[in-house]
Each structure stands twice: as C-alpha cells, then as structure tokens.
Length: 304
Image 1 (cartoon, rainbow, N blue to C red):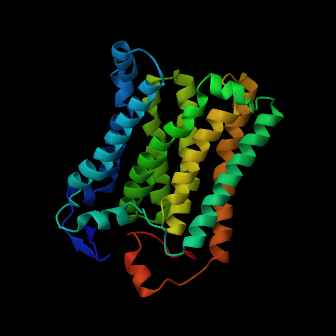
Image 2 (cartoon, helix red, strand yellow):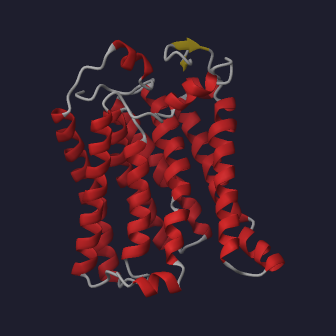
Image 3 (cartoon, rainbow, N blue to C red):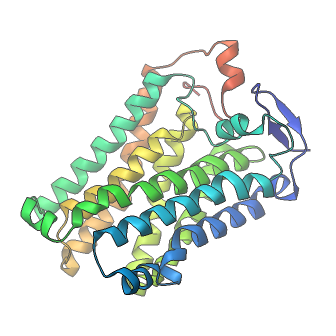
C-alpha cells in the first residue's frame, strides 16, 4: 500500500484509493483547487458584495479573505481527508511535511535557490520590459489604479496553488514515478489548471497563460525536488505575479507580448534549472539521520 507520513517522519500504510493512484489524485487536486480559488469569480462575489455595501477597496479585501479561507479548507482539510491522511491523531504535522512545507535538509540551499529563481525572473521581466518600452515604474500609476493590491492578492496562488501542486501533487507522483516524470506531470496539470482563467480573460490569452504556467512549473518543480522544500516555488510564484502585475504596462502590443511570452517561457525554466543544479553542487551535504527522517516523502538529497 502507498505510504502515509506520520508525525515522526516515518511512513505507515493506509492511504485512500486516490493516494494509490497519483494521476487520478492529481486530477482531483487540480479540480478542487481550481474551484476553491475561482469560486468567487464563478459566483460574481465582488459584484454581489459591492451591490450590498457599495464598491470600495474593502470589497477586494473581503474577496481576498474568502479565497484564502476556501484555499485553506481545500488544501488543509478536504484533500487530506480524501487522500486518507487523517487516520492518525498526529496526522497534521506529517501532512505538512508531505506538502514540503519545511526549510528542507539544507536551509541555506533552499534560501539561495529561492533568491536565484526570483533574481532570474526579475532580470528577465525587467530587461524585456525595458527593451520593448513597456516597463512601468510610475508610483502614481500604481496607486491610482490600485494595482498595488496585487502584492496582497498574489499571496493566494503563491500559497495554496504551490502547496497543492508542488507540495501534495508532486510528492504523491514521486511515490510511484521518477522525479522528472513527476515534475513534468505536475507541470502539465498546472498548465491545464489555468484554463479556469477563461472566467476572466479571452481564449487566446488564456492559452498563452497555460503554456507559460506549465513552463514555469518545470523550474519550480525542479527547485522543490532538489531542496526538499516548497518555499522556492512559493517565493517564485509570488514574484512572477507581482513583477508582471506591477512592472508591465497593462496593454502590450502583439509583438511585445509575443516576445516577452516566448522569452520567459523558454529562458526562465532553463536558467532556473541550471542555477538550482549549480547551487545544489555548491551546497552538497549529507543530511543527518534526524534530518533524513523529517524530510518530505519523495524529496531528494541536496546533491542528488
């Protein structure tokens, strides 16, 4: 039977059918996470609240709080129940390790991998935006359009999407598949997951977002597997949403949009994988027995 992580870091059997069939489980994770994070758009939540209290910034905060709460219910309550991880009294701490919500066996490696990923992303977006003259560093523009709220709203996908995809999904896939199969499969599900953005944007734009999300997921997944921590993916996911939301002009020409999309999709995951691999060699270490037992299921040693 498929192992279940206990509070001590060791494994025990007893997961549900979804835990034993990670592809089916991945589809369930993607579907439930999508519903949780897009439900407010499905039911026109902001418009309904605004109709009652009038439109103001507090409506956005209410929407943000609702989405955060739904994400927590799905990722921390519904999914562990469906996957059978609630069968021991000490299940929650073990479940957090299954989500890779740790600093990893080499915290300095986790920190440096996170910093490298964000630096690569910032350099690419800033350089490309400047090259095509779509870089916006106007504080008045950001404040007048309330675009600054992206720094708060970006917490929702950075937290719950990463725990669901690069945490639970990637860990479960690694139980039965090679790490690169797990990384690529997670990336494909993450790309498909973004089809829910059809609620907000045109079809052509959503297709580009799906491709970009899948490509970024390769770099994020590799960083998680190498460090044993979901932190690099969380930080990078948050960074990409904030950088694109605040640094790029809202309207891009077709040529600028295509160039930025193509460059990011190709360059970012490749450069991230190379950077994390090089950092892994530099921070190569053999974890102690205690660190090894507390490492999330499926995580590789830093030098692997």
